[in-house]
Amino acid sequence: MYRIMFVCHGNICRSPMAEMIFVELLRQRNLLHQFHIASSATSTEEIIRGVGNPIYPPARAELEKHHIPCHPHAATQLRKSDYQSYDLLIGMDDANLRNMKRILGSDPEGKIQSFRHADGTPIRVADPWYSGNFSAAFRDIYEGCTVLLESLLHASDA
Image 1 (cartoon, one colour):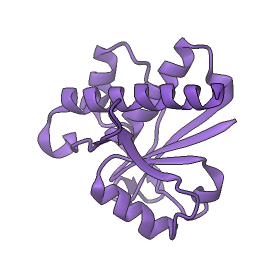
Image 2 (cartoon, one colour):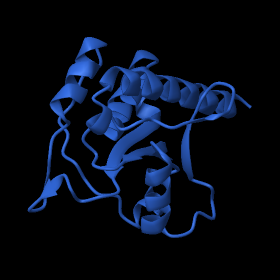
Image 3 (spheres, rainbow, N blue to C red):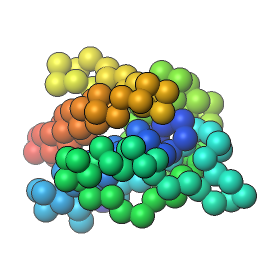
Image 4 (cartoon, helix red, strand yellow):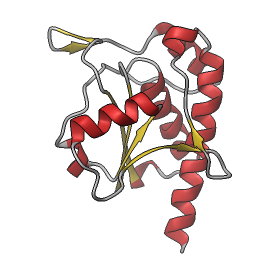
């Protein structure tokens, strides 16, 4: 089983969107049984008294607009132990990648990465919490998830 964690600042917009998009892509290909997908935050801002906030309503609305099912979600923070528990940890932007390395420590296995376009260039998913542009975030995340899944399937064929 391949384990992937998507990571953003608060775990209420970008990373749960990525989690739910990736799960839907896997479901469409009947591959859910081969993966474990999760998401987390680099901050604790959306975790109040130990309880994580749900997906932000505009993020949920954007997923629903594209017929992506939203499963129950509560924000959680990335933990150092997640490095050993996951095969790949995908950060949404440069600040997330820096904070992931701070939380996780070194990255000897090269597990900490960003999304990539089909041409291999990094995708930096702008935070829709600040921009309000959830459609742009969805577009970038969907592309990143699609390219990631294709690269993993291609690597498993090799």
